[in-house]
Image (cartoon, rainbow, N blue to C red):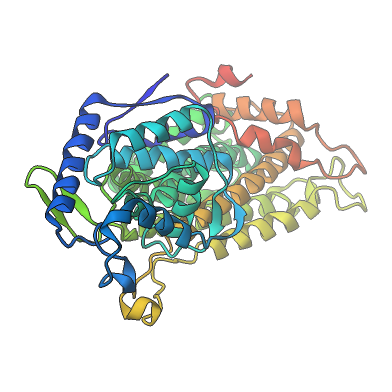
Length: 480
């Protein structure tokens, strides 16, 4: 389905469709007209000989120098070349495509002064499957300058006057990457609910922790959403029966499941709102204001709103993954579960059974915690470009860290599911909830139960499961 780029209503879901499913894009007619009006403002400024940053002047510390007015196209092409300083490995193709879609949507706002012809060439390249090599390292998040240079040059663009800086001075790469990482984080949050509720089944937990009234007593939106989802996943479970709970109160990693996951959902919702605004924002400098015929220098390229929001998302995701690790480790301990140590198929075996799965679980959770360290608080060098460029946001790093944290979380949840399924088996296959039962059956389709003296199950076999849609209570049969 074609995604219409209007400059005002691009969603995270749209970005995913274009970047990963190959949905085509189209520039809205009204956006085309806005772009033309802004270009006329630029051409008028050139004709008058106005001093405009990056248009009739150099950039950065060279802003006092003026390029040859007769060779502005050459100046703009050299401007791109001078920023080809990116480092390291390339982004994956989906991130690059997300960046292109975001860049075009920014141009659609009509505030950059580029030509319609340039934008149409970019649209055509995206629809043809273009995904040029864009290096991941080297941007400080005050516009993704090196990455944007890779993008523009890789697309084979030859900018005219004023278009070089417009192609460079925005945060399309970090914003596009942020959209994809957030989509993946929301999917992971859904799987954390599934694995966490399967842990409750495996532990024979006390479901008073899911009392519906909790959301009224503490009215956080995320808490209500988590309670609703977790209760739905457990609909029909034996644990709702009177006397099913083994303990009056379970360990905190079980008992605070809705609160921890609720906090994560609130953080992800906030981050999604911030990123959605930036997907549809004018991030460039200078800014062409076609209605008043002005071109103004400003700092809309400062990516702090997105970088800080992603920091918040990672901070909230880390404890959710830490709690998942704790539940996994506790399910392996006989003193807490009443089941054989290590969830061995038989009690008293000398082998470690599934116990060693606690080690990678702890390693993954620890690494995820380290990735939660905020990056938006970092400061830049006051000596670069004569002390002018003295701020950084590290938005590209913030997005990369969220993506990396999600990848670690997927593996941790895979281990959590494998361990919980083994514990469910040892409890005699009790009546599970609609959603937890569906998840258990999918796990068992991919990973068999571990018998006596057998090696631990290969949780790697569950990675692709966790990278797909998570089961729900209402539609549990759809994943059977």
